[in-house]
Length: 326
Image (cartoon, rainbow, N blue to C red):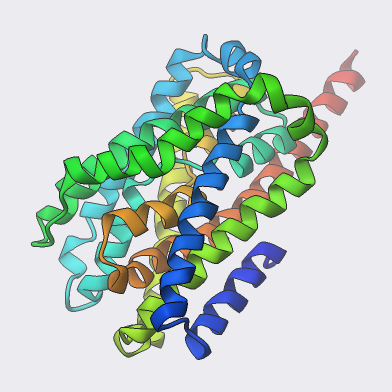
């Protein structure tokens, strides 16, 4: 279990924004550049989406229902169960960040990668993770509105959905419609596309944290808050993983489908979450709102990497045992 290179870059970018935030005219220039980078990010997401894999995975509707229930029902429910911890044990700002985290869709790339590594149903993972990402554009603002409005923070849900449609969904759709023209180039330049995705996220994080630093984020968040985020992220992930394993076996899914449910139903997307936060919340509060997401993102990568290796080793042991019996 170790920090992946992208997480190290995230820490570096947050540190850079903490000491050298962009302000004034430079901040306006970065805000414009960030919008263009986010549009390009979602254009590439759409262009990478293979229709053949989606069609191949559509038949597993029971699996997709379990994943969606985990992502958009169980996560928000667990987030709301944290309410008694506020404000004695958890600051209101961090709590809102957790509610936002729980409302987000699943990741696409890492969910598929871990499913493949563990020997799961990859076509179903592609379909489920992609559907979660697309549905999140509509469902996440609604969930945020329902959960955060209760806490006394107003979110204009309909306006947020319209803004997200224009800034995220439109580039995604254009990218997917362009796939027949650029699919060969996309498929042959996967590493470059991956670096472009990461660069866009880093730019959005730098811009968001620069604004947050100017507004005094590190006067609002201390070491106790960071420790609380780590502890609650571990607890949240453990509960979700345990539930997905239990419900998969309870409903009689095969091992490959269980792996898909475990990895697609336990993830939260940083690539969707940070740009969406820029639309949903005032610029001054975006940094605090995405802090739990950034920490949860790293924890989910470390834990799921270990879990994927364990699944793969168990599959190898079962195969060797079966060969021995034959």
